Image (cartoon, rainbow, N blue to C red; front, side, top):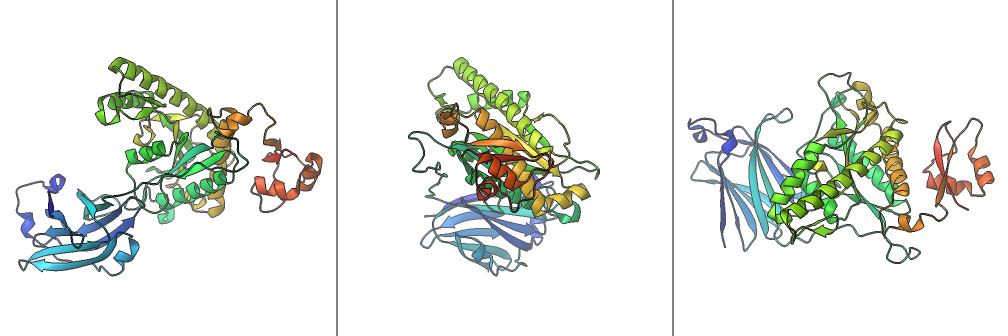
Length: 441
């Protein structure tokens, strides 16, 4: 069975000049593997038309470029993908380039062009390969034999911005945003995994790109209670500095509610636990407005909690939660924030953001802000909601001059080892003003 998909690089066709007769050399090829798909990026010497189609028995994807040649090495590229078995090339009609991708299973192949930008000087052809019969696995809710029946963890969706072909901002010392924010996200994941009543869900687990709306869609499918997207800011003036927290603007919320109401694909989806499928338009809009209002209110409080913790680690660019119409924040029923961990374009902050110790401090600040909010405002049906009104799992204590970990342990009747564990302490050094958790004995 043959499926044809003729693709014109329309955005790059700027005149009727016969540029397609000139060579469009493939100068480089990159492969990015994600859990859901494989992305190949071909650097071209000039914009060019191409044809892409799939063949079966055996499964393969074919890309044809007229009057083109392969200048890049394909060695080792198949080792970077779970889908690609082999890449090979051949010549058709003496002048045309044919690229054949042997795949492990039947795939849906799609492609689109990208124009040069600040990072890549070449025109690019992007090819995505998605398994036809793909089973999507969502992170399970963490359980334990000691947990109460019918109670669940609070699920925190952690989104490391950019990834793969999109490096994000490139700052001082060629520090790439995508690597910095993934390191912070993974540390935040580690902290949440060890915390009673919480389960993290990583939207991006490696160096690959995910579409902006797909990020929030993944969080919704994971039944997340909160979505946090982690970034590092950049500005043309190197002196710009400080951390920031953004929530969805009121204008952005209004436009998103209208989009959801107009999008028939969303009708049967749940918004705040309610289906819109059988609702009149005015009732559906009312439900959306209520959901978005609740989300914005929770986002403000969560943002303030995170800002309060981040102020202990870094300078704040703005001391209040800012508003913007970021697409990644447009889930209609999940509190969502975008955290800018600092300006990667600032030499001093770029050095800090690339430092492992500082990344851990920033992750800890986000962690403390998130968990601090949810201990006070736990969602209904969660373990923390069931525990509210009982003795808290932890008390907190602010370190004063002269305090030692051993004295605090004796005073509260807990083991020093337990204090180190719950506070993620590598040694017994304490700082004045530091807040530590003390387990109930």
